[in-house]
Image 1 (tube, rainbow, N blue to C red):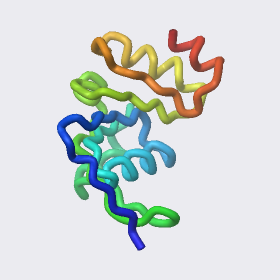
Image 2: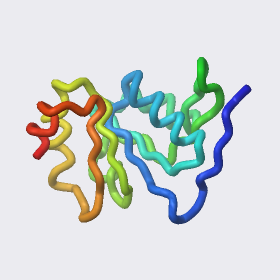
Image 3: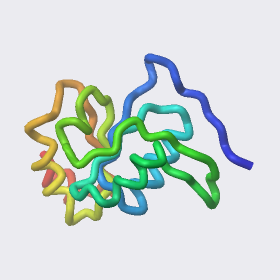
Length: 126
């Protein structure tokens, strides 16, 4: 049975998932299914085309259902504009690259979370 959530409040945080690999797609789909506004960024556009065409991500497995994605883009400035939480979902060796990409576009109050979040990644991002 699909899980269904409602978090459509104007007060709900807005997310940007940075990385459209397996983990990023799962996270974006699940958050979208839960009713959160989700943007999805990937450095190459090819992984984003199916998300754009379908309007989101179809989830199957433990969580089943459709997770709408507000925006799927390879433009980092567009992806993180007016979101509250940035979830970096790339291998640890990609954290420094992602930090360099987002740094010029960060807005006051935005939270950056590393997945996986380890000490080395935190040192690279500071």
